[in-house]
Amino acid sequence: MEELFRSYLNFLRSMRQGLESLTTLNATKLAAAQTDDLMALNDLLNQEQAQALNFRGLERERDKLLPQLGLVGVPLLKVPDRFPPALQDEARREAEALRNQYVAYRQAAAKTRAVLEKNLQEVEYTLAEMGAPPMETGPGYQKKTESAPPPSMKTDFRA
Image (tube, rainbow, N blue to C red; front, side, top):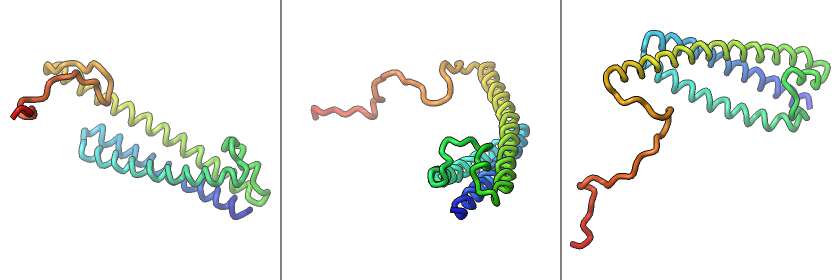
């Protein structure tokens, strides 16, 4: 059973390291957004997507460990209390380090998001000034109106 608790501690460390990586990535993304370096920003977004896949793997690991340890529904701050006495201090340190890193990540992400949103608003304003039609809906797919296909795509079946 102690091996399962050690696996959970390794999971917490992996989560913290992943958040550290995302925090660093956000700082780099902020710098790229501030200097309007779209190529670097694109590369950073691809790296962020790769990190998201890593977190999915960690989520699967967590979903496997929690039931085995009887920790389903237990908040992270209370998890160390459920550990064996010999591992409780280490569990508290890891849980606190993870929580602190999460707070740091959220702060970095909020700064980056604010700069990116400001830049997008500037682009929309510039496009409007140049005479582009305003966007009527938000991001994503827009509903298209039905129209006939172009003449080159029409077929005469009577032939």
